[in-house]
Length: 276
Length: 275
Image (cartoon, rainbow over all chains, first blue to last red; front, side, top):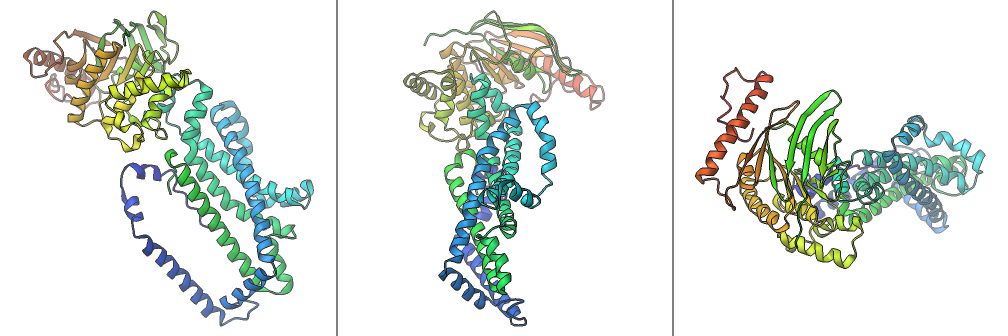
């Protein structure tokens, strides 16, 4: 999982063509070519290493590919991907939708911030995996417990990033807004919220990464479907290649989600300083 | 467009930040439609005084009034042009930035569009109305700030070193433009600057301040030279010298206080007008 957090720093890059801009202007074909070459090299190394071990210990790329074809043909892979994706997207979307207003409120109401702060400082260090058992006890083994865990991991990151965004809004802009006749409520909507957009996007991307970490643990503990479940049940059949298929599917899915998020936000939110 | 400015009055104003006294017993009366320049070395409290007139800073003592009403906070009748163009909203186009004030005040759409077009034209930005601030030059951004303030039709315009970050040529153009715009709108202008030449080009009166902390109003120089003004004109040059000595003494005192000067009074008096 690569979490690339450049949202805020890139803002300066839009006005001034600096080193970042120059680095990016490397021909697209070269960039893609190098990535493809690197992946091919990785597969070759994997293949060479796997020749020294049993298929149970380290399945070869070819065996993994066959495993993937089997899982695609019997529909397991698709149903796992769609089950995990649905949980991630639902929990993550809820977390963003709730996290943003919570962060905004905390940023604007100092006493609320002080009251919520001890909880945030405490739960920051409790990973969602620690709540898997509780989630199942309280919400049952169904979808709700998994979605709640994703929500938990998302809402904190998004709220904290939004809060950081609110606290870093340029005082100058707030003064300008007030002198132009904006009341506090309209300042919040028209100035504070737009100023925090890059922070919100960064938080949402980080949360997406964490959601992938969380979903696997949750599905390993209690689920009949999903990529975590696929990885775990492969053990019962001594099918190590299925574990590899599950891991690769997770990585690709995460990459795809992040790519979509970046593409959508950098296209629609460009004016707010979101550039990738 | 017949509009007149409001008088501004600063009475015995003290401004403190904790234990730090920035301004002490400042007194200043500004007439309707007057262009007053606050001139002084960096850190002398002139921006602080401007912020008090704007209503961003509450004086610890004394009172600021605008149109005979006490100033208790920011208001649309007192527009502020900031030194930094960061005050523009970068996610809005120039047109949307200028439209911001009228929109917040609840002015009708059609009326807003007319006003925005008029002020964009006044500052010469009609052709860049749909660009974002990040795509503009420094001078254009300050024009945009000015248009945004004017669109609210304020009776007082407060300007905090608005041309301080511009290059010398652009600054000269902006000064001439501001002189014209001020005469077109008739608003009262309070203009903070550390540039003596700028103050002479623009001000009806030039107010110098003593070096802070505990800055106070030092001298008031009436300046009734015919407009548009020329700095190479002998009367301008004479005023320039007087102001330079006045400010120079304050700069020298500040440097002495910081231990940077060896005590030769007047060593800085003839010097750095940027100081």
